[in-house]
Image 1 (cartoon, rainbow, N blue to C red):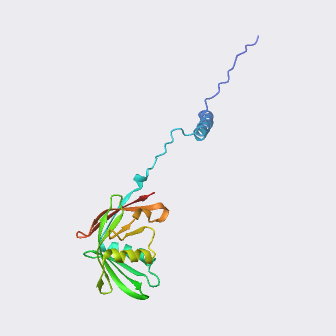
Image 2: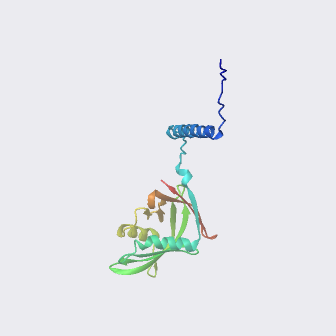
Length: 197
């Protein structure tokens, strides 16, 4: 009889074969995990609510800057016989010319500015000179308010001798509004708060 020997063929352990399959499993697993992350909605999304007070800011100006801002706004209204100029020196002064009996006459007003409770600016008239005449404040303001177009945000009260600048009604770009906080002429300090409506 023949001896049958069983010969076993022993396979050699090939590391590259197993590393290849490990790489394939990792690629498939990574793709599945990445797809799961990409397709799962993010539940923890938080939206910060911005209140109008978060968008407020302060602007501090000096006399020269206030005069420049006033010149900028008054350019729109300086047409024809109406010419205005607002200057802050020791007092607030409004200069201009108006027609009296068909003739242009220069005028000047000395004003004392103050901040109202709601952030507007009130100008109290100290004196008015038309030409070389010092006239009663209520008479000139009354004639001025009826004879001339003033912006919507300017109110003239001839009885009390005041001019109110309603800063809340001045339409700035994209809903920007301003309110006065401090008007201090002797210390050259003018502070305004800005924000969005």
